[in-house]
Image (cartoon, rainbow, N blue to C red; front, side):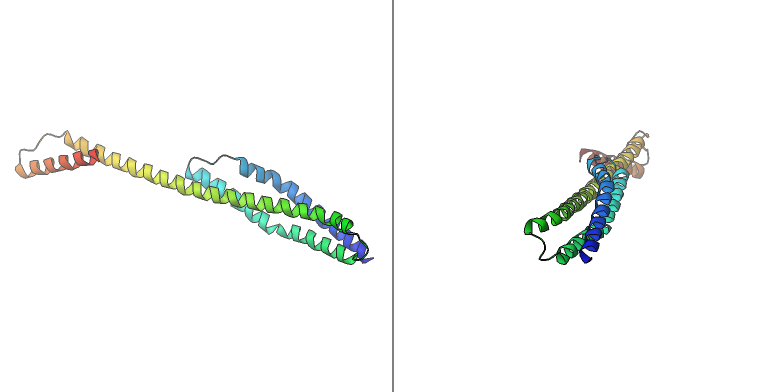
Length: 173
């Protein structure tokens, strides 16, 4: 009687875990195969999706644990009535599920790490580009001022010469 209940529990737990894996594996393939975005917003969206999927995978680990527990209970209830080969036959599907689960967890976790690094790199590049654009805007403004006629007032002329030298040294850097 106990063996029958344990066999049903094992079957149900395995079915639930298999169905969940069948649902989540296409999502994992999608997250893993998508090329990394080129701008921070795109990478942030990818990272958010990958982290959400990773959290779901981690939270559903209980399905795998339930399948292991059900298998252990079945083996225990049939202890002494099974050969090592029969025990192995009961355990193999659970071991396969566990391996698939660990593979998914590792792959999505690695993808999250990869996307976090890509986001930092994108943000660094964007910051550098914004800094360069700001500098170019300032340089343009300074050179527009260079086209103004030279002042006839000595102090203003000295200031214009100083501004010109500063702008010239900025460009040479």
